Length: 175
Image (cartoon, rainbow, N blue to C red; front, side, top):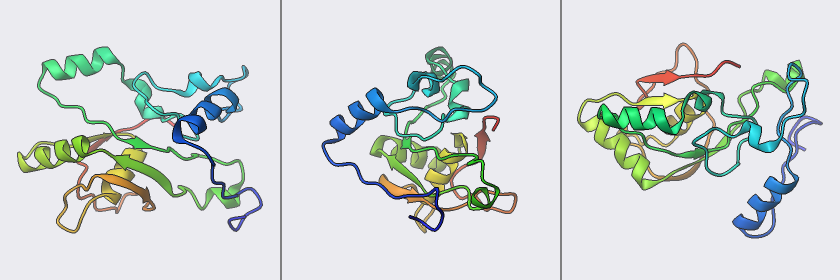
């Protein structure tokens, strides 16, 4: 238990592939009260998603598809991907919701960190697709304001007074 009867810590045994296969076979997505039909796991994956590691669909990512990314490339806009476990935006428990957002796992590959460093060096803007991406990039920022590759846990909150060191703008979903 993690300080609330609805929070537990779990650890999966087995290889990454076996765990992901098990989640895909047996997992169920967060079911929203305003959606009457039961959601299938693939209903919550964005067009460009990789591993199914989020607890809730990363809503901002639904705005993107492969055509959009191709159009951006045609205009000289680079797209760099990272993996993150988008947490819940609501638990249904007001006391627990006060603790949101929970810590979120992220993995920033070298290619993404390098693209962000290059954009910053050239004075270009870094636009995050979703709040969780902002949290991941800012958590991975070193004291020199450079993004480090690798895995980590985003613990910070993004609010009106938050000073962002990496991200210049955000495309966000509606929660």
